[in-house]
Image (cartoon, rainbow, N blue to C red):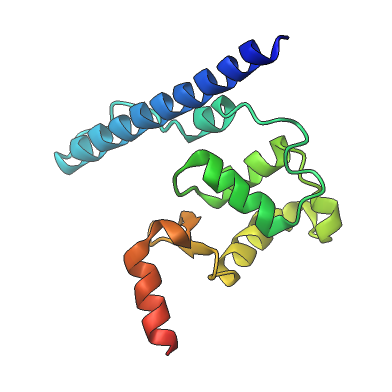
Length: 148
């Protein structure tokens, strides 16, 4: 494919992913409002759809260190994610968990523990999601102040 067309496709995919993220946020807000009224949510959660829409290269995270790959994934998503979303994204991007010596049935737990321990890069939010510390300026300042 021509490089210009390929580049245009990449830009459009990024725009599409951003639009889908905004739609998902709106659906979550509507669901939260419905719940506050004591009503059933109107929409199913869409996190799984977002992971699919990112169009990762199958080798995007292959050969990368875990923290680097997780950071790249969150930067691509541009929002805090649940550990299972990060795990699926890294798997789709070819991250080699065998190199981590994590047992397959413990990967999710090991991933969450590793992210929580690396609090210089990652930040665990009260809702159980992980984001990049650089996104939360006030939190970063609080943590720097308590370290002194």
